[in-house]
Image 1: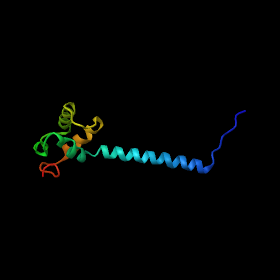
Image 2 (image 1 turned 90 degrees about the vertical axis):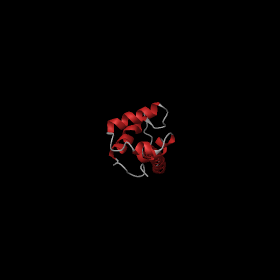
Image 3 (image 1 turned 120 degrees about the vertical axis):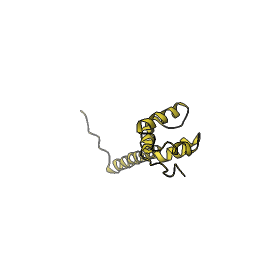
Image 4 (image 1 turned 30 degrees about the horizontal axis):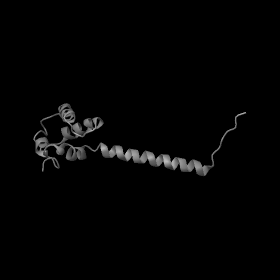
Length: 103
């Protein structure tokens, strides 16, 4: 005969709190990794100045930026593949002369 196992409410509450905390931490990491402005200002500038990026604002559309960022990744840029579309969207929507890229 199978007996149902019931956990005391305190144990259930502790499990829920721990699980919720893990989800919040993971969500926070995901947001941090996918901040396109931060990615551009830290990862893209590891190899060249922002002037190079600034000169292309308003010249490239989203698809051209995807190709450019993907090419930079293939050359060693430390940008996660999942972040490339967000970075491209960010750059495609910046007006020429926009800060912080064009200072």
